[in-house]
Image 1 (cartoon, one colour):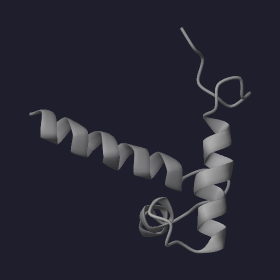
Image 2 (image 1 turned 90 degrees about the vertical axis):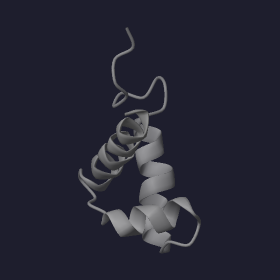
Image 3 (image 1 turned 135 degrees about the vertical axis):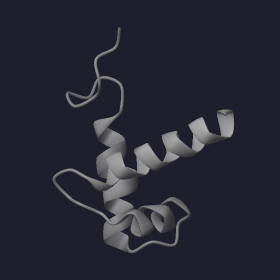
Image 4 (image 1 turned 30 degrees about the vertical axis):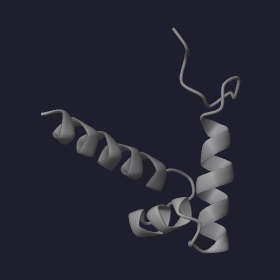
Length: 64
């Protein structure tokens, strides 16, 4: 049961990162996370999406 929950969480996270103003295919997200992606995909995944979820960011989910 917990393995299924982890798999579902990872799948949901990949879909969440792939959608938005700059869409990125899931395959490009995975390669960017392992440092083998295109420069554009790495920028979007590691910089733009990471900044959106940083604490204090105006796009971060509400805390509490």
